[in-house]
Image (cartoon, rainbow, N blue to C red; front, top):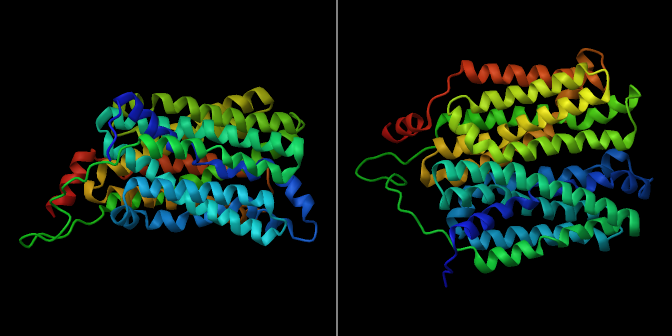
Length: 400
């Protein structure tokens, strides 16, 4: 039975799906405790508790387009959130590290469904500036609020009761599952005249521009990795602050992303062809400020600027793909973006290690320099490659 909900309620329902998009970070806040709990395992193996969900989320994200055709949105939502909650909380009751990592894989499967779904369902219900606002608000603001909640909640439970209890934070999305399942209506099936062969017409293919955008997402996600893993090293190694202040820098970065999510729709409307390279450039400028900063104040300034850039770039890639992809295969395009984000997160550490070895450099400021240069170059390449308006891209695709 289809429920009727008001527009504001519908907006609320579609954006809260993104609340757990980056919730896999709970393990990051208690990783040191987990490493100490398993001294017989190499720390690199233990770190898979934090990194494995990002690897596994690639699998359902790659096939999200096919999943969305076979199953309705409510079924995918229920499945994704259920896998997320089960995989998230299981480590509380498990002592075996391999089984904990396997449970984290279940969580990754859930994220690989709900992350593209959170954007896909917005494109089903909304268009134009409303769609842009909700994509920015969901993928940046709401996702960052969720990240902060899960990191702080997991850390507090771990400090109070033990590291395994930190995973109980994953019970929180039960209310999201209940509210969305009860009140979120199933989007109406739209007729797409270009989805199959009709009178000799070719079946709609994914525009080439989508693949280039997805490739840019891989590099973008990989380059941001340089900040996340090195800013605390810079702060403590240069005696600019302690571990708490290092954590504050990452929180400031997240806060910048959160704030940018509020204005993404307006920013995209002001710079319809340049919002992506500008967002990437701002991220790079933030990294550069952190690299040259002689004190904690400038690091915080660079962090909030870099975070704001990501708050434009991340939803910008989703919005770009949803704009230039034919409606019949938008779900597949969004899934590719999520998969690219996971690939970038995995390749980032290896890429930085290769560059550091080539220049005989270690961790700290050098990776920040690599990030800033890489992001600025990515923005320049984006501009030089041309920035067609979405409608033009769509017409080329459908009339070939």
